[in-house]
Image 1 (cartoon, rainbow, N blue to C red):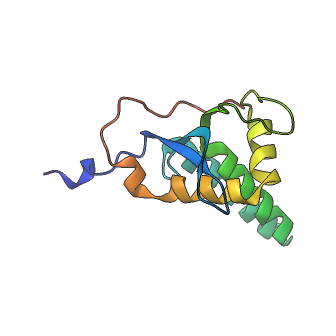
Image 2: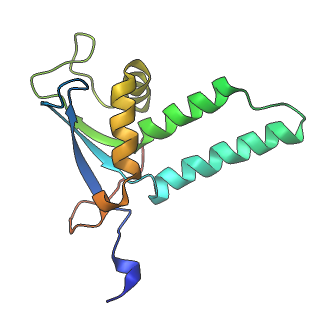
Image 3: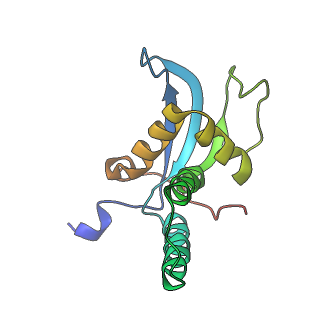
Length: 137
């Protein structure tokens, strides 16, 4: 067995959101890319470059900047979504980078579920024909 084929970070994972108190499925499915995918790593590198540039200019990286970067990373993991019978603030939102950021920023429990699933390599080790598309910017 070739060890480099155990995990495919370009696969997508279907995350069904679960109620934060009861753990009941909510019927909302987010299709996620891996936190280790090429697209996610590109965003992480861009953020790291921005942070290093700030430090070279003797500017500190504030906790607010770090928090915003974490939220942006989480939003970038979302490739598609299906809200089923549920909605977000009275609408069935179209997925855009800004809307994904609004959702993960607006509900800590969604942020947690998205990041946990995207960072779990086991979610990207099963066979799938779906691969990670480029994020829309």
